[in-house]
Structure formats: C-alpha cells, structure tokens
Image (tube, rainbow, N blue to C red; front, side, top):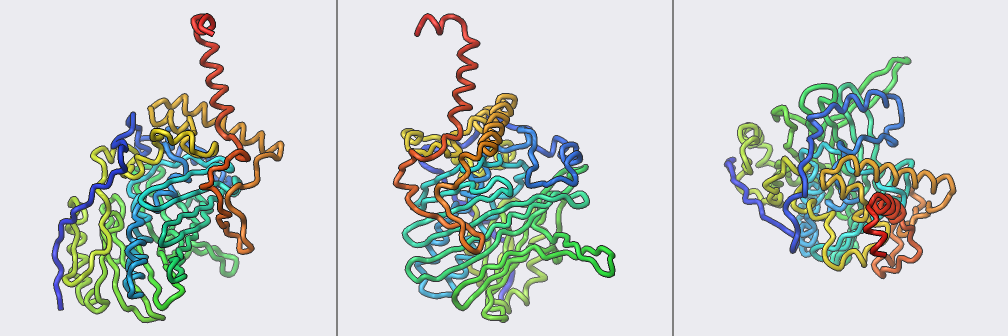
Length: 448
C-alpha cells in the first residue's frame, strides 16, 4: 500500500501572444454591495429575465464565459492520442472538471447576450463559436473544433432563490466526439449556489441543492447531489461528486472533488483533487484505503497556496494555470479570461457584426465608466425589444434546432460571409457618437 504526501503544484503560466495581464480599471466586488436589495423586489418573478445594475456585472458576455471551456483543450488532444480507452476517459474527465475551474470566486454576473449575438475564438488549434439562439428563455449554442475533436452543446441557464442562496443551474449539455474513432462523451455542467446573499460574505459552492416534492399534499425538500457524470459510447463512464463528506468549508467554499471511473457498476479508478488546482487518479482500492488520511491532509493544506495531498502511485492529470497577480482585483479573471475581450491588430475587420467584442457597454465597464456602461446596456436592450416587437432579427444564423431540442452548428461561419448578419451594435454606437459630436464646440463644424 502507498501513502499520502503533500505536493506543491507548479502552475504553468500561459499567456496568449501580446495579451494584457490586467484590465484598465479595478472594480467594486459584489460582496461589498447588497445583492439582496436587488433580488428582493424580484422574488416570485421569472429569474431568467432577471437583470442587475451594471456594477454587478463582469465585463464579459455569457457567450465569452462559455468559451472558457476550451482553455484546457490540450487535455482533449492528449486523450485523442491515447490508444488505451481508460486513459482517454481519464483525460476527458480531467477536461470536464477543468471547465468549471474558471468559476472560482466568480460572483459577478456576465452580461446577458442579445438575441443572435455571437462570440468566436481561435486559440491553440481550436476554433470556438457561440450564438445566442433564444432570448426568452435564454439559450446559447456552442461549437468547438480541432483536428482531433469536436465539442457541441446547448446551454439554458436558470436562476432561482432558495432560503439565503442564489442557485444557478446551467442546464449545459455538452457532447465531445473524437474524429479518429467516432467515440463520444457527454456530460452536463454541475449546479452551484451562491451563499450569504442576504448578509455575510458571499461565496460559491458546487453543492447539494433542494428539490421539492409533495406527499399527502405536504411539501418536502430532498437534496439532490451536485455531481457531474461523463457518459461515453465506449466501455467506461465517470462521475464527479462535489458533496461535503468530511471536507471543511472554511467559510469560503468547498473546493474538493472526488470521482470514479466505472465499468458498468464497478468502480475501476478513483479521481480526486481540488477543482481550482489539480486532478489526480489512482487505483480504487488505494484511494479507499488512504481516503481518511487524504481528507485530513486536504483540510490541513487547502488554504495553503498551490498545495494538496497526493496518494503515492497517483497520476496527475491536470494542474490549473497560474492566476494573474491582480486576480482578486480583476473580477477573479484568469489570464485566459483577461484576453477574451481584447481586439488585436486586424481583428475588428474580420469579426462578425454580432460579435461580443463590439459591445460598448462591456468596454465602458472595463474602463470603470459605470454610468456610460449602464447607458449603452439600456440602449442595446431597448433596440432588442423593438426588434422583437417588429418580429425582425430573430432567426439564428449559425445553429439549427434539432428534434431533441438541442442546437447543432450549421457550418460556414469561418467563411466570413457576414452580409446577412444583423448589425447588433452599430446603431447604438452611432447614436452615442452623434450625441458626443453635437455636444462639441463649433471646432468640429469648421473642420468639416
């Protein structure tokens, strides 16, 4: 039998060429304001239509947040090259877990995408595209592709309020296909809750959430396990659990994760780690034998920087990238996230007119101009209401709805023929430009 040791994890520093490492301005953390004052008047309403003041947003569209899923695409490249099916499942499971790591400490709400808004990303051999295909209810469709794989999905997030918690269920259904073998893997993102919405310091957990049932006309609440199951078309499946079974909360979120790889109903491999830092795998019997010691060491070291317990003989599957120095002052953005709203030389002329990077409200928020951001945001929403009333601009360009209710990529986006795309942001930009010009002195007039 092996033993458990403390390991210092060396996070890789990964920066896109020429990217920034900070935003233009700092922000007021949402824990410093009262979300309850905003939620309270909206209790009983449809939370899918819930809007917040711009200072409670982060300067990203929800579509851009979805692109964070491809940050660790190298794990899928590794999986695609594995001849052994068990090893493929290990790396696919690591990728699925890594997709939730960017949620660490993220309490600000992304901007709601406008209907038909898009976001594209080309990075590290992967092309990613997301489109907002429905506004009420909000539904986003995503597609990513490399030489080795495709990932497609439909995301229909819901928000609800229970006791003192704000509960977010992403309803994110993702499907991975390896091109070489045709093997598929499917999973759903886990539910999460934000605690202490009424008072106290807020924090987020992937936890058990309430499910209401009735017996003899009396309501009862059961608690559904917060988990993530990866189902494959092959021999193995995997399940992650985020439930607190001996782990401490530390009043700031429980970051442990445990899981298993199954063959049928038999547990073959154990998966364990810290969903903000690392994932490892080991023999199922070894983990069972050493779990008590492992949990004790996890609780002792979880607040130490980049440390965690590892059972001897384990394979380290994933280590999170290094976070920016200003992580706590920049919306808790990773370096990858900091790059998503940047416009690099020559990019603007290639982007679709519906791309999230063209939003002036997010740019104003990045610059710390909250009033200007609120004004732009309001104008975008007003124009969207006008389009809905006129029944124009409501047919998705790049995705089509399937019989099962999910959305599939139609193709041709990267041909960059955007003449039929709605210009979502130009009219608001022009209105603002006109207003700015009219407030200028006669110097502008004399120069025409």
